[in-house]
Image (tube, rainbow, N blue to C red; front, top):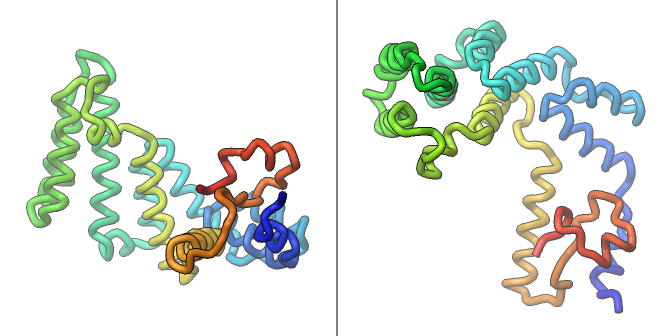
Length: 237
C-alpha cells in the first residue's frame, strides 16, 4: 500500500517556470556559464547575471581546482584589487593552499628540493600567522607535510592533499566574489534542500506525524524500478 504522504506529494505539481528558475539559479551561482547560457535559450529565460560575471568566477574556480592558485589570485586581483586586502581569512586560505601545492610539487620525488616551499611559508604566510592563532595552527599543520611521508599521514593531515581542500577554498572565493558583485551567495536549490531537511526533521521528531521511513527526493525522474529498489543516491533516512 502506498503511504498517504506519498500520494499527497504526487498530487502537488510545481510550475515548470519555478523549476526552471531554480535550475538557472544553481547554474548561475555555480559559475557554469555555458550551461546557464544554453539553458536560458532552451527554456526561454533571461540570464540572472551578466555573462562576464559568471565567466570570471568560473575561471577563478577552475584555476583553484587545477591547483594553480597563483593564477586564481591574479584573476581575483584583476577583478578587484582590494578583495583580498579586505578579507584576510580568504587571502590566508588561498596562500595556504598555494603552499600545499608547492609542498606537493617539492616532495613528489625523494630528492625534491623543499626550499621553495620553506621560503614561501616564511615570507608569505609567516607574518600573517604570527598575528592570528588560527592562522598559526593551520600553518604549522601544513608544514608537517614536509616531515612525514604522504602515504602514511594522519587523516587530518592527508585531507590537506585531497581535492576537498581545493573545493572548500573555491567555494569560499566564489561566495566572496558573488557578494562583491552584489549577487546572492546561496543558491535557491540549496536553500530549498535545507528547508526540506528541517521540515522533515521537525515533523518526525517534534510533531510526531506519520511519514514514510524513506522519502524519495524525486530529482531524477524516478521510475517504478528505482522506487521499488530505493535508489540510495536520491533518498534520505
